[in-house]
Image (cartoon, rainbow, N blue to C red):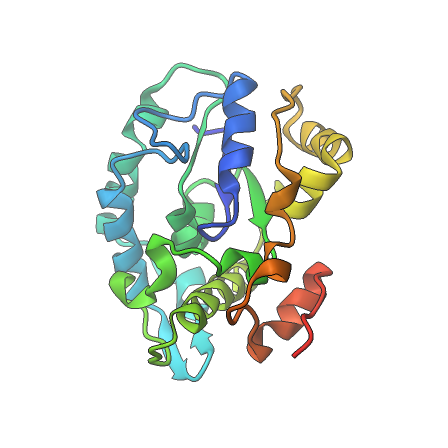
Length: 242
């Protein structure tokens, strides 16, 4: 049984948390890419497409996730996840887990499959998160319907809000900790202490880059959309001026 996984949208700096776990002796599967994602990702991507069949788009930026919490999990999905996590599940390590941002897209069924493990929900200011591309920018690649747009950053922002709504709509597991990337960078010791209490083992301290926080302030492009406001306020992020 895995011990821990990281939930959070791509380009959210989840790599920092994965590297902390690796440096602390947690086995994160093999092989890993430069972002410390467990690869190859194909079976996880396919699992995302299986769960998407049961998400109903209501139009605009609203989706109905209710079926995901009660319906039987298809055998196809379970087999794909077990295949993707083969190296983790087979490892004899006491402390083990995995990280790949696409886990967020399948979170409702992952938490039903592994209700006892520890979930770290990693959040980053969307104004920074949408500055660079990620595989999950176009939700249609994973079978998820959303409002069509030619604006690349708007597409990324829609991906961010979809994943946040999916997480918020999912009943939380017994072991759940929300961590802001900004706190990990700017208040590392206090944040690591919270994580150590949550995980119940000591963690290594890795180098962090303060300039990873607030990059949107130097950005000349569009990095904020009104539909992000409520979520940003909930996480305590500054709303950029128009």
